[in-house]
Amino acid sequence: MGIKVERADRIKNLPPYLFAAVDQKKLEALSRGVDVIDLGVGDPVEPTPRHIIDKLCEVAYDRANHRYPSYAGMMDFRAAIARWYEKKAGVKLDPETQVLALIGAKEGIGHTPFAFIDPGDIVLVPDPGYPVYRNCTLLAGGKPVPMPLLEENRFLPDLAAIDAHVGDKVKLMFLNYPNNPTGATATVEFFNEVVEFARSHNIIVCHDAPYLELVFGGYQAPSFLQAEGALEVGIEFYSFSKAYNMTGWRLGSAVGNEDVIAGLQRVKSNLDSGVFQAIQLAGIQALEGSQDCIARQNAIYQERRDILVEGLYGMGLQVEPPKATCYVWCRVPAGFSSAGFAAELIETIGVVVTPGSGFGENGEGYIRLSLTVETDRLKEAVRRMKTIKFDV
Ligand SMILES: *Cc1c(COP(=O)(O)O)cnc(C)c1O
Image 1 (cartoon, rainbow, N blue to C red):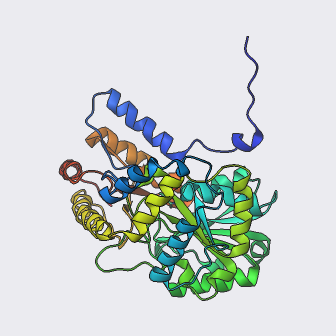
Image 2 (spheres, rainbow, N blue to C red):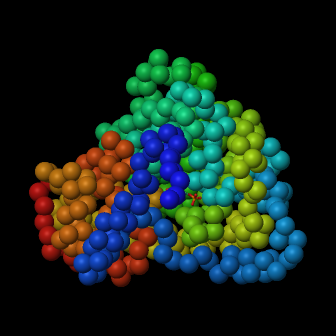
Image 3 (tube, rainbow, N blue to C red):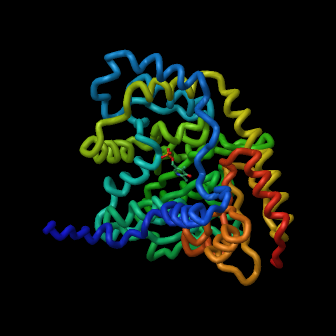
């Protein structure tokens, strides 16, 4: 007889990973023989650009890259990130102290509360939001407090509404613009207000920015580091995943306040041993090679956005086309919950979407549709959408 395997309390409190539940629904439909079109998960379907793969292949043979990498990342990699930020945001970063390599942004996000949160400390998390902010806070023993992102506030948190009592116990705040799941964007002026708020309550700001470059129609998304004084209050998570179709490679970076970077590095150096150097070198190639791939990919997403929005109109739904991200955030018809409408779409037209409620209480009443599916498949999904109609 085997031993009794009892899970720790800290993981008993965690919900199953959001997208695992979506995968389950999809599998059930597939087993019924449905030709399922998955608009649930945000994972680019196009390959990583050729010049980045070529670099990986070239440097993978170099035995110097086969040994343990440095914990913080190669100096050349950190310097390339710093150069990118100078060009993109006009911010000067010291690659030595203000830049850290990550095994994807998610890894850095997940480890950050372990560096700064003691049991009971409050972490402000966007709601709806990427589930990792809340769950990593719980894992670290902290208390996640949702900041509602409401349509009437253009999906920005109302900083003034954050209770002063809460404010003084808050240790850290997660933010994410361009936003997953709402597709909302923020201005530098908003980021300036965040810096002021963080200063007055002594809060570490962690801005998650994987969609900085995934923008349409000439819109330019600001980095949090463009805000006045941002380096005094927080960090930004940069990700290669969405901009360069590199989700599988696991590469990102944390940039900004050196005390925050140092704390995160302390945790990481005790848990992981850095990023495969060949992948860091390919990352430099991504940052410093031709950027045409980004414009090409964004044109693809923009076309898909317009196709999808037309399909949603066809079903009778109302939706605002996003200026950034690979998601469309859409209100469900009257009489449906998020999960109920997602189930309806799988059952009637074989289209998988993510229920907004999976991103938090304030996501109830919405679904998220992803643009990371082949355009032909999206057109097929839209063709099916036009066969059904709902009242809003
Ligand atoms: C996709 C995504 C990430 C994950 O980035 P990785 O670099 O692949 O870990 C982080 N945050 C948000 C909001 C995302 O949508």
